[in-house]
Image (cartoon, rainbow, N blue to C red; front, side, top):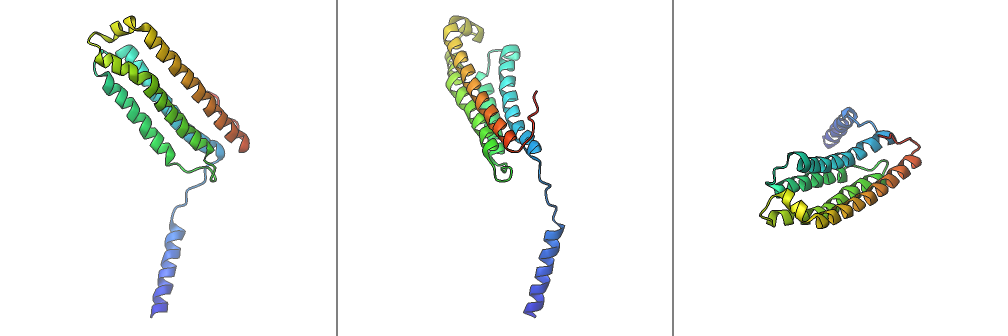
Amino acid sequence: MKIKNLILVFFALLIITGCAKSRPELTAQEYNNKIISFQIQAVDAVNEYFTTLEKKYDGHNLAELYIWLRDQLRSLQDKVALQEGWRRDTKLKDGVVDYISGLQLALDSYERPVVELIGAYSGSASEFYRRDTKIFSNYMTQFSQSLAKLDAQMETAQSQFSKKYKFEVEKK
């Protein structure tokens, strides 16, 4: 009786595993596009933050807007970190994780102090920027330099991945 049950369990497992849908393996190009899409979403979130500040922001709830951006970046970083490597190669994925982490660090270093200063300031944000142009300009310069380094590192990681797996990176 035990042998009969074992055989039935064995065949049931074979049927289940045979019927299970296997994921088709992505090509290196498709994997690249999938992983890079997280970086693009992070850049889009940062752009949306600064566009909102420039065009729509009325001087209230700056800290909330900043927290929204940080949450967006943290969520993207978590999502890309959960992705598998391509054929166990995680360098591209790690590069995107590092890129998003670097964005968060740059924002914390150069944008958060501005948010905190404006939050403590009783006047309008535009008055703050006029009064403290030098501080603001210094933070923006440092932030831009940090982004340039991150972009160069990301470009190197993507270039190495595309050369290793022999495909052309789509230029935008």
